Amino acid sequence: MAHPLHLTISVEVLASEAELSSAEAATWHAARTATNDAYAPYSHFHVGAALLLDDGTLFQGTNQENAAFPSGLCAERTALFGLAASQPQRRIKAMAVAARPATGDFVAVTSCGACRQVMAEYEHRQGNSIPLLLPGPDGSIYRFQSMSDLLPFQFSASDLPPRA
Ligand code: THU
Image 1 (tube, rainbow, N blue to C red):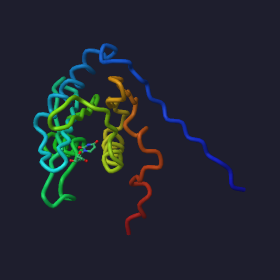
Image 2 (cartoon, helix red, strand yellow):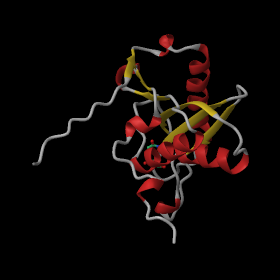
Image 3 (spheres, rainbow, N blue to C red):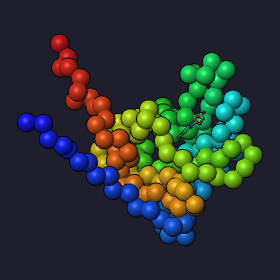
């Protein structure tokens, strides 16, 4: 018998960055600073992502666009792929994202579906939840305890057929 399935996503809404821990605030500000390094000559939308690593350092990503539009990549994925490509042994303790028009103030943003899928897999690969900070409306901050919370019904390796 068909029945409805109601899913719940938990997210904390912080009124402002004053409610962040010092480590979170550093990650948050690194994401904002990273927007200066975006390459977004087509959308004029500068996105920055920051990863707080287990040694306390920060690793940034920025959106990288291309005249062949689909060849570009979001800030979240340049951060995650860049880290995994160069320092695969590093563990991620938190991630933050920031966005603004090329000239203008910071705006709210939520990561695209493709980035959510990648976030979910890197979290799974690491073996523990990774908190995520996203800028919400009116200066608020959405704090997710797990990046996977953004993508219910995500595709995972366990959905693949067994290897022959
Ligand atoms: N973009 C990101 O980098 N991250 C997001 O969360 C949303 C979208 C980029 C992709 C493209 O370079 C530009 O923003 C406009 O979509």
